[in-house]
Image (cartoon, rainbow, N blue to C red; front, side):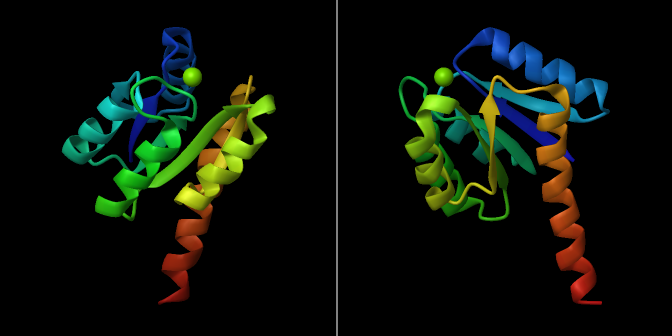
Length: 128
Ligand SMILES: [Mg+2]
């Protein structure tokens, strides 16, 4: 499974990469704004994207919407701080599967990914 991480704060990218790699996930791409995120996602086709909502150039909401228009199977997890609750609702409206509130614990981030994968498995087995 290929994961892409997007955040305009370098330390957030570092934290996420460390957590994901410690759990055995492969981080194939990193972007620091929504504009780069769209371009990179189309090129690298990640299975899961952790998408910060508030970023320069292009917001995470707009980036998520654009990516899902072209790659609708991508699972995008919105990442947002507590004071941006309306942003989270917009993210879900844009097609993000779930959201994680910053600052997050390692278990919360990994739990959000596990939940997506469990749901996928459930859907797959439903058609057997
Ligand atoms: Mg940000």
